[in-house]
Each structure stands twice: as structure tokens, then as C-alpha cells.
Amino acid sequence: MRKSTRYSLLLMLALIGALAIALILRKAAPPEAARLLPESDAIVYFNVKPLRLATRFDRTPVTHSPDYQHFIDATGIVPERDLDAAAFALHRMDDPNGPNGPVGYSEVFEGRFDGERLAQYLASIATARENYAGHDIFSIPVGEVGAGTSTRRNLRIAQLGYDSIAASNMPTSEQIHSIIDRHRAGASPFSGSSLLSARYRDVPILSSAWAIGRIGLPFSERGYITLFGLQLPLPEDTTFVASLRYVGALHLRIEQIAPTEADAAQSAAALTTLVGLFKSIQEMQPRNSGDKAFLQTISSLKLEQRKDRAILTATVPIELLQQLTGSTSTSSSVAQPAPPANMAAPASR
Image (tube, rainbow, N blue to C red):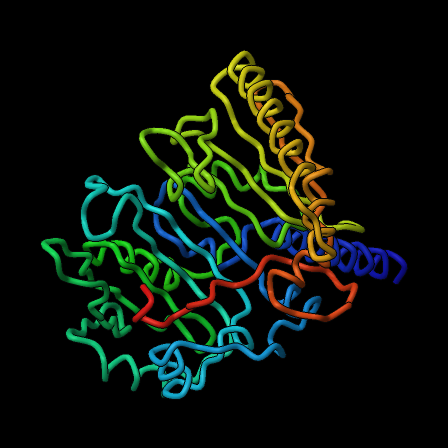
């Protein structure tokens, strides 16, 4: 009897241990929306729910364009209310002067959607429909034609399930097919693209907004990264790991992964000079009460080198996020970055 009881206890402990390990592994795994993305040069992920809780931006009146309001009326989807997470794959385009420009996008959105109404809306504006692995893929022309140039391209959209949508504006259907294939393959916590497998381990734990890969892609100009007209001393193919996480305060962290320690030291020195210059310029600018949170963020900027990485950190006040989202909430809950304003409005793509 005692031996049987001992075996039963050991078996129970083993099962509890296995369950605990499985839960820990799944918590450390990339979010499912990011795991579904196809191969790409960069990935950007947002968890919207904590931001909505912190700033209550979903309760702030928003004026929409006529096309966007038509999308809301037809589908019942209000992104600021219904979107929970969004993951974006950024693809470098071979022809930067083509309809997509230098970067193409593939996306996965998670939230609360009325699948039937959304399907009816997509069918009403689509110019083509493909059925792939049991999923309807709607092709919707977006962009403009005129003045001798064309940005016309197809936006492909498919519903993956009751709570998820996939989209891609790439020239072929390869990327959205890949998303559907990954969705059908199951929910392995460590599946995903090669970039996700290689770099997600560098994302700080508890980060609910992060980006990995060649994040300079959307900001490339003449081979360098340009922000707000300011050229950074970094080539456009620089690899970054950027993150936002709440640990008592909202922390921004951006790591440049350099080929060597010498390269990292050079980048850190150049960026330190640039940050110092930026702080000096901000100190000379006229100030008003609304600038306080922004100036606190600027003053908290720090740069350091750790082996082959140049690391920029800053503390972001909750008040700054409330200003950016147009919210007057004073909630002290965890905050994250805002969702894309045009989650699934084809006219905006």
C-alpha cells in the first residue's frame, strides 16, 4: 500500500512538473501572431490590450475618413476597440521604385471580428477571390494611378479563424499562402520564420511591443537610416532588437547588433554625440506644459556598448502615451504602443 501511494505521488509530481515546464515554455515562446508571419527582413509586434487598459484610447472620440467609416459600418469592426494584437513582416523589395516602394508588408491581426460581415464586405470590394487550403483570399486593388506613375497593387486578405485575419500587399500570393500554411500546421510554441527563431531570444521578457531585424527598412534613404530628416550614422541593413516593456515604468530599449565589438563601439560613440546634440537642441526650444512628458523621455536617453551591441535606453512616461493616443485617462496600468490606425481598411493601404 505504501509503495503504491509513493508511486502515485511521484507520478502526480511528474505530471505537475511537466505541466509547469510546458506553461513556462509557452510563455517564453513568441506570440502566435508573430509565429504565423512568413519569411521577412524584419518583424514588428504590438500587444494592444494593455495600452487600451492604460489609456482608454478606445473611449476617445475619433474622426474617421469616409472610406474608413464605411469599413466600420459595413463590418462592425472598430479597431481601437476590437484589435488585440498585430504582427507585421517587412519585406525588402527588389525594385524600390515599384508600386510597393522599398518595403512590402504581410500582417496578422488578432481581436474580436464578425467573420460573416467581414467576408461580405471583402467580397463586395474584391476584384478576385482565391480559395487556398479552405480559406478565401480576397484580392483588393489599392493605391493610385496618375501623372505617369502608379502605386497600384493588390492587397490580399484572408480570415484565418474567428479571431484572426491575415493580409499581404506583396506582388504574389506566396506570403499569404505561407501564413495560412503556418496556421494549419498547428500551434507549436517555437514555430515561426528563421528571423523569429534567430532573434526572438534577444527580446527582453515581458515585452509586449517589440521589433527585430532590419528595422531601418521603412526609413532607408540613400543607403542610410533617416528619421525626421536626420540621417543616423548607421547603414540601412543594420540589425536591431527594439522593445517596450513595463517593469514599474515603461522602458524603451533599442539594441544595434554590430558585426564586431569595434563596430559597436564606433556606433555607440557616434550615436552618443547625436543624442547629446539632440538634447541640446530640445533644451533651447520653447516649452509648454504639454512638452513635459516628451522632455522627460529625451532626458532619460542613455547609450552604452556591451560587446558587439550598442544599446539605447529611455524611460517613457505614461502621460506621453496618453498624449499620443489622445486620451486623458490617468490610469496607472501597464501601457503599450498604439495599434495601427488603419488595421484593415483597404483604402488606406
